[in-house]
Amino acid sequence: MGLEYTPINNVQLIATKYIQTKFLCSAACNQESSCRIFDYDLISKRCRLFEGDSTTGSINLSSSPTSIVGVVSISSSIYSSINNQLCQACKGNRYEVCSAETNLCQYPVHTYWNGSLCALQLFENGTCE
Image (cartoon, rainbow, N blue to C red; front, top):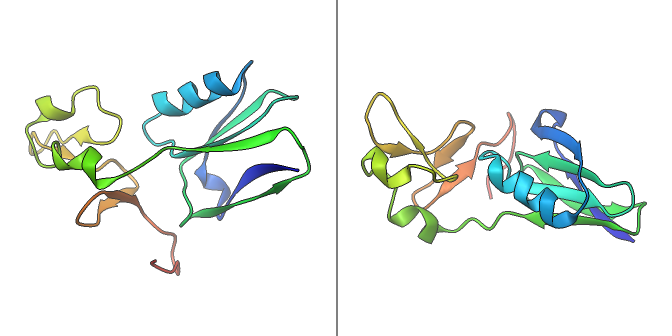
């Protein structure tokens, strides 16, 4: 059996694409700053990009034996050198965006600063981990 990502809310699906390889699916996720997890089926070539993680969905068994899940690695070391720095520090960076109001690198939309990294916002009545 393969694996697939199941979001808590369907609004987390950013895009569904049909791409030739899992590498290109991974690259598509990396190009989309809000993508934190994707799944890809080797036979159908379906690539689904999600704004989600283990707090906003789950990785489950798939009916397709050729389905895989990829996760963008997020750690505090990514943010330590850029958070609240002048916008030059986060230019071209997928993890933080430039705030036009402050001219400082800030967490992107649908995330919040938890003291060490930009975590995804939970849904109403969600449980913090």
